[in-house]
Image (cartoon, rainbow, N blue to C red; front, top):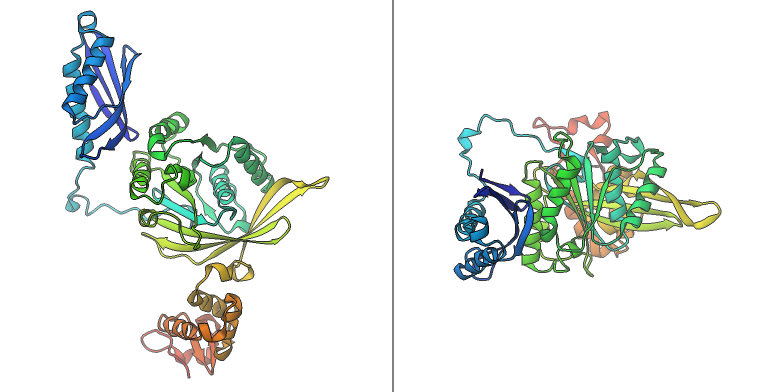
Length: 450
């Protein structure tokens, strides 16, 4: 019986020859400089290894060498396998499947089908079936928060202090930076901080190769761990992008390979969701090739401020959204509790949501325009003449340098009905009392009140 099927980012090909079972695992497919297709092929005969080679499937001489090597190892006279014909069949199937790509869809055939609404596995940080990214300076607790979300999905734990809605999911944490002991210790801290007695079922794997070289193994792990569970979503966390691209995330080819590997997971039969953790450059922007931003469907920037010993504030700022609306900034307080007898030994980590304007990270992550809206919404009504001074204090800038930006922001938010001006005061529509209801025109929009 002949079977050819996709497996991870590659293929499995099994065939029967002269009562012998021949199986090939094809992986690590790459396009060569002259548009050829190279692959790693591991061949088994009757479940016994024969050869592992990296031929170029489009090269006549390369495939000729490949089948001759197979014939030397398992001669036709002894086994009756026509290796030349078998190799030609294998190469043709792989090339056709690789070039075919996804099947085309005539939209009229699916016109009546209901499109699934965007589903958050961790609202609003991990969008189901998509590639999500968080980035920030080193030491901004990105990995800790990634593990925190994994704990919530793994355990189904709910706490109003978190102000986060999660869906139960199976989590695979791929680590290029730490080791098992670090991850285990952090998970134990988080479980203790949330009073979760059960041990973690998060699956951990240390990785040392670029993701494109690991994706076949990742597919195997998913199948081995959750192959019988077809209902529970799966989330793969990659920490972090730098090493997951082999240290080449400024190069377009490395970033393209990384997201191609992610797409093989998100577009597979299990619709895996992914979270990529990465860093900023020295200017404070997302480090690496612009494709990182373009290929991610949901991007958050993370900023951290230590407020006192054992306590930090973390702010999240939504930088990109596809298929969903932009979210307001979020903030959390992380408290690291220590052993009473050893002040340097952390025993638990607790996470609590905070209003962004009640933190030290707001000025770092919010633009002047965003600060205007947040200040007016949370602190208003305010005198309009006082607003530039308030914003300048947050941004640690001179009033003159931001006055024009404040004026522009006010004008824009009034047009969008987000801010109302009355008697020299600025406020949100919710602040307007009943006596000013006349400001609501027939078209349903707030009018500027002079």
